[in-house]
Length: 597
Image (cartoon, rainbow, N blue to C red; front, side, top):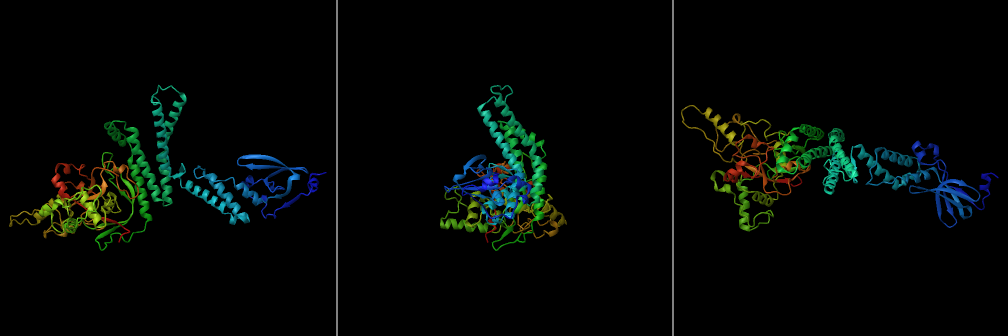
């Protein structure tokens, strides 16, 4: 008797088929055909109420054989017909859906781009062909998980420990991991770094492998930057590109200082200079300039830029900008140039005046309210500025000077404001074009700037124009601060516009260079720029002194007026040698977030 007749004569067996699918196996793509067996999957319903599902490999009048999947294991079972109630043949869609179950998603697993693309294509095929696909939320969610993985891979991102990192950042993380493993080996086997280590060849081989892997990362990182940055810029992912170049910058600095320097501080400094002289840091700066140019070209103009509110504060637009000195090297405290992001903010158009500051001092003295003081400030601090003891500095409209950082902090807090960060101050001083000085790039004395060089130039100009030989007098411009909204020395009516140019900043801010130096929020560190965050940086978390910016009426060189120049009481030689003059030269201005009115 034929096999078909035996099946037909089986005792009481009902072989029922599910409603015939409109999808035939031949309609599937080659990839789906490889996934779904041509033979139909079946579900065997047992008389006990249980079911068994698998590929029907053999059947006789007495038994049925199935190939069942249990995870990654293929399990063959035989079922007696006397225990079978019925057999349902699965549709192509049912078999397709069951096969797709094997594609589970693990966020910590690293998938290849081809894997993700293949899974997405198979799920899309199932959803398009099979009528139940529209309601299959589980499969749709899985599809989105693999699609998101694919998108990250196509952006050049890499996954490490379940976290997506850009190519350079991931390479730096790998480098750090190799260094940690090497350090652990050296700690366990102190002689491992020596050529005569022979205790365990396997340990030595592992050490050499880690060394080579670490060196390979160093060799590949510049190429990764060339690949990833243009890719991120094409997607207008400017912060992603910024983080890539920042990671490269910090990687090289960290490598030089930690890996090359050695234990002795003097030796470290020597190695730093030697290695940095041999490196093309211009490559990194060019990449940053490329990112900034692409960002600026893609951004619409902020129409509020330079707007002045009722409180006398100027709106400074946020965004990416380059901070630091392009000419700086490893010995300078503003090295390297940093590409950072700032949120928009308001900043005082002029320095805080004696009149404004006097209101604060009178309030504290009359009310005994010290709630606005910094936690580290001396108790019951006397906020009287030293500049008030000098008549030439104490005018109502002159900037308050001779205040320390705690005085400036308390005043700003009392006003519902705060001191600007270094980054905010520099952004306000140099604008979007990276100018060296608030007025531009030319280092000239012929500006209405209150510093020694400009005052001497104005004196010479005025004395030449007045030199008719009849008065016998020489014009002398007094050293001291000018009124905060004045663009020329006090009571000097002979000064004409042609004799000195307006030196206000790019958004109309007064005296961002000269007049009074200005406290900012950040602690001072000569290495601060090497660790600076890329978004709204606030400087080191601890320190001994704070930074002041902008030069002053006592500045003797034009360099002190550069927008990127940093100064601090312990860092400025003149401040150390002439303490009395230092106490007279520093004032401040305040900021508010742009969300404030």
